Length: 150
Image (cartoon, rainbow, N blue to C red; front, side, top):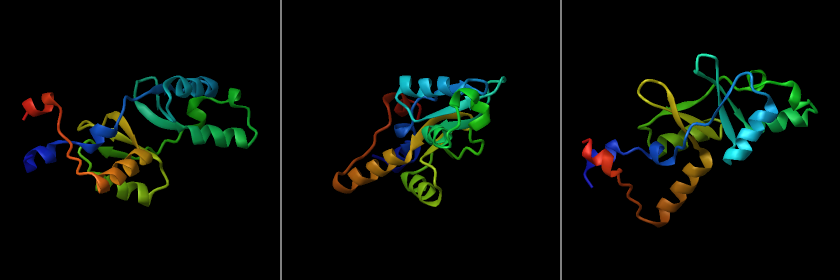
């Protein structure tokens, strides 16, 4: 594998998944249903202009319930976290590990060259990837479509 190919391959693309969203006016029970239906622990929140303006995690909902607040009385925009930590698609595994070590977040948004969120990657996946690379010589290969784009 050439160094050029390694630089173009993205560990973030390998670990990210589809962006699941809700609307700022969606109720918290609706947001929780989106999470359950998609087997995910976070949902990005979009405004009326279809722009991502926040994120809701399962932890946000747990804290709301733990405070004995009625989740039916809240909208996504009321409880979302607006400070979304992001990485670019070309972030390295070491950059991700460093970011997760420096912050308390468990997931980060992945942005493309236009700053649009195109995925999400979580701390658990990064840690598991690093764990297995200690025991196995894993060499990631770009998809055939990425090879032909070179």
